[in-house]
Length: 471
Image 1 (cartoon, rainbow, N blue to C red):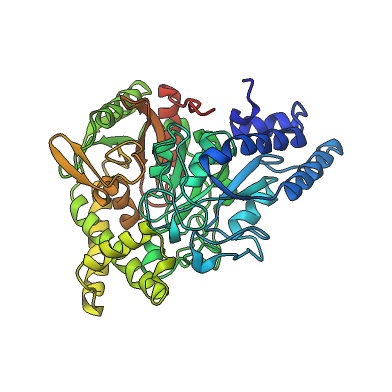
Image 2: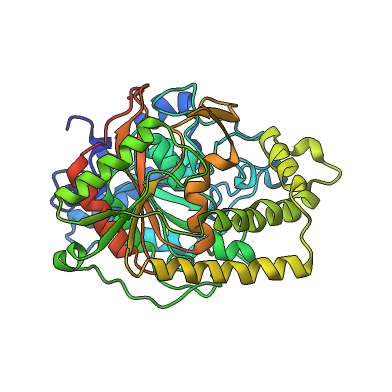
């Protein structure tokens, strides 16, 4: 491959260790691509050229002196700007935090650095992460590398655009309602939403706590499943700052164990229609997994609609209750997208102590019923969203004679935030306009390794990743 920035991160690491590549050379080519493409995509909000080059020179010196190095030694990555990175902007896209600079690295950033990764910079988000597109009053709009008139998704849209375009080898997003998986699907890359607590949310803003701790996570994004797997293994592990943390050891299943996993597959939820190309992508994924030796059966779990409604209480309503007071008296500082989200939140029924407690208990009951169904189908395959990447400012779409509204289009991801399942997205198909379409692979809690193993088998069969047109 002539463009070094599109090598998989694991290949970059191998070639760096074997001295076929220089860390300085690799960083410089990434910085050059950022200089060329970021003015069009607006993915990065800050890149520290001086520090990045200094770290690359130090990485090269370590290789020259034959020091033991980590799994990501010299690999250039990016971090969503909702996570604290020492010396870089930590604003989460809001004027209320304008100029906020990280004073230390979040634990997962420290783990990535300890593995040798070089942090190029931090990436754009919607304001306080409350959108499935990326735009704010601080830095403006992030565009898709597939079509500048379309969104790269949200809230990890800057991260997705940076990785898809080769400005970064991989990185970290966060996900409370599809914010890793929808951007990955929109931009043709891979992403993993882990089980809450598997990768520490410590150092994330907004902070992980209360209902957000049940549904919000941080996770890896990259162009290949192998890269996502390496990032996952480096970042995973408990941290005292994450209220859901648990000491779960990494255990990669054998090929035989993976092959015994029964897969349940559904193309839609019976409520929100999906585009024909999305339906076709799920069918392609099912056929590919059968070709890889999996037993794949049609299966639509019960309880999806109740999970969607409960997710709205925990995310849309509770988020509005927490965020709206922050903007009292300074409403002009809220972006139009956030103002709209707050309007949606205000339109939801009020939550009382009694109704919140009831919702919490119902959530646990639905989760138990869902996991019982997954005893037979420990892996589920379904859409990541109802549509491919949409045009900026669109809020509804006509599919199969039905109007699909903004919040409903992402319900395919939202369920699994409410239920706590790990879920990955892998590119599989294309829309009529040539836009990527990813498919979602879902597993039982704490079984990220199974999810990634199946995702890797699907990726190998489909081989659907492509370089975006802007590159």
